[in-house]
Amino acid sequence: MLVWIDGGILPAGESPIPTPEPGAFPEPGFFETIRVSEGFPCFFRRHRERLERACRDHGIALDEAALDRRIVDDLIAALDPPAGIARVRTLALASGRILHTALSEDPRRTDAPFRVAIDPERRADPEARYKALPHAFCARAQRQARERGFDAALLIAPDGTVLEGSYHNLFILRGSHIERPPEDLPRLIGITERVLIDVALPDLGIDVVEHPFRADEIAETDALLLSNSMLGVVAATEVEGRPLADASALAAKLREEIREAAIEEEGAP
Image (spheres, rainbow, N blue to C red):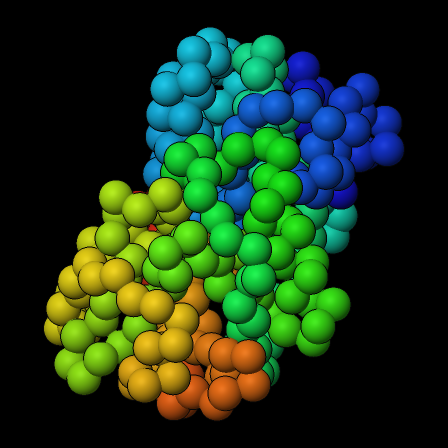
């Protein structure tokens, strides 16, 4: 992994600030995770604007020059071997300091089963609307789900309403339309979620509505889709061992729509 900090690019082990996963990050702040595909950072502008908004809401003054797209392009270009699929994280610390990290990744097989657990803890955190450091609740839920053999966890409000996934936004398919948890719930509004709503789903002629739902309703729907910046969209194959309808073909169409939207918005450098 490489780190950009204070105008220079270093191996992660030489960074003056440790760069563990967000759930274990030693300083407060906010972060964004950006997929690099075909050599460019997908939806970089949208990610930067969400990060700036979180910092502004919390009174953090940022070094705007450190959020220049060209810095991220240089960091991606420095990966050895050059990135095909990579993950960039941009971190804004409470001090206003900016770090960017880049790591080449092997893409997950999108045809592999995707198993979802239900997190046993209930979440009631108004700050969940921000992608904050440390990302402890989500990291703990994801870790415990994986220890049980699942790929992700559903996060649930005290009243039983489904909020989001551990690192994912959620959509359920009912007939000809898709439902998602309302935006006024304490949850993060995802970048990929917004692209799906703004571009991908309308292009496929699928209506989206906001509607609260509970975990026990999911098995009775036509599909459960999960989205985030690195995966794009995947179709869950089961929830807590209960099999779900196969929506892999729809997920594949949506991933292609997202790819085309990313190229149109950002363009390859």
